[in-house]
Length: 410
Image (cartoon, rainbow, N blue to C red; front, side, top):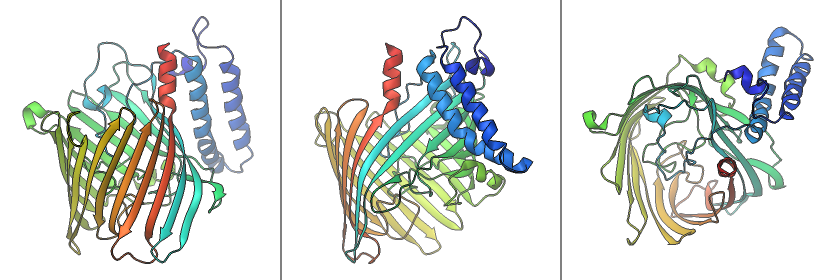
């Protein structure tokens, strides 16, 4: 099937006839709207800004009406290791890969509360979130693909929008934050070029980069553990910045510039223990990071234990760390807690600014689609007066991707 046949298929295909006029109406409306903009450059820019949500809506229409095979890759979590798929490790199947795949499709809402060290309430509201990941295969075996990520959040460390209920004005923007070319020419070798997220390895966003961050650049990953011992060796070069420019199209001008380098190794010692270590140069700052993740058997005292830290070498040496343990109380309930020390302001999780903090997570998973997470964070010891002392987040997340996958399975 060619790209054109996806939107205008040949007679006799299994697509619902009702989606064709809808798609044509969407794209025709986009063209008509952009014609109102004066100047050729203005029309081109307006078309790309408007066509992204139109393409996304069109993809959803096709997903519900066409017989696509959806990638069965679980949504990455802050504590988990990113799942390795056939497209990422270079292995391929003898069967042809689907032309278009959703990798993740989640929506969420949360109650968000922050009280600072000087006893001021700076946040007491409800927020909403959307996260979509998908990729477009450029060949039958899925070795070459274009990946895209659409998310809420208007700055680099924020992935949520205010609803207008409570503090803060409502925000409705959704941005194409990630867009990159991914190539797996041979088994065990991967290249990424474009706008993607930093790689924290076994570190989480507590001591690494916030899960909502983005950058422009190139990454080479080698996964040949039988020859090189490590499961993955990667090198990243690019530009990390544009903190208030989430739109990837406005950041492509940074390609060719470099203020960020990272060299990382990862290794799973056995089915219980995995670790990673990296050296990062970020805008003149040299940092080392190490992370260890231990998953225990069902009969163990804890089901998950993580230890991670960073050392800032130059300038202004310092360090920070995070210790976290989690226990599954029942099949659908887990509770975890930890201690984090961050010695300076970084582009890590906004839940863990500078200072010492204890935190508690309570996770209830009703099924593969719906979950509720309660996260309480409390600063201890000296805290800068304007920074959060107490923070509470109660998050309801719905994994719409699982609904689509289950629907296709039936």
